[in-house]
Image (cartoon, rainbow, N blue to C red):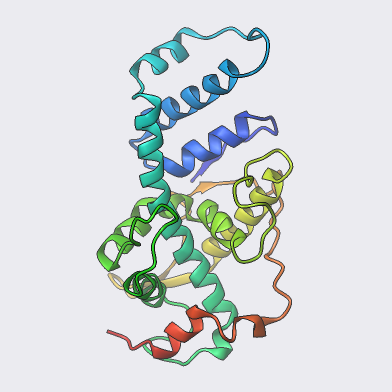
Length: 251
């Protein structure tokens, strides 16, 4: 497990977390660094007045090696879609566990990844799309996105949950006024994911939903977990998720 190196300063924490969410892989350090330095210095370049900092040789090298800003934005959008899938899967697991007494016992009791994948797949098959019109991914790509972004699924889950129980305006999650609420929500999903276990079919044991050895973990002393403000579970009674689960049949 690697701890995310937040230090309480902005824009460092905001850019760091966004770079990590989009390039979480063990071999993607270069992508993270290129995104970080490009985003950081673009911000500096557009600040009023002369820049008040020295640029390191390493940062200059990363800027020269990085793709163009439009290309980085394109890559970031594609990775955001895959990351949101992983976040939605984790949120579905959390809600299924929370609502387990209201769900039909089909396939396996309570929350299972197969059910979470089925929810995302059904949502795509109903013709739903991202905000820019790109169709949602179906089953094969859903499973691939979960595996790719599982190390940061708790971070994406905090973004996903904001759509249902907002703690920040949709486009201001990483704004200084709201980023601490984001970190606390993500820390909560981190705790849930590392404590909730799922079957490991290869050796008939249980393993954590989020693998502690690969998860990019927040320091929960610095970012105390805060649960989503769900006071009445009946608000989910007519939700699309429950409707899908009530039709669900195990494969």
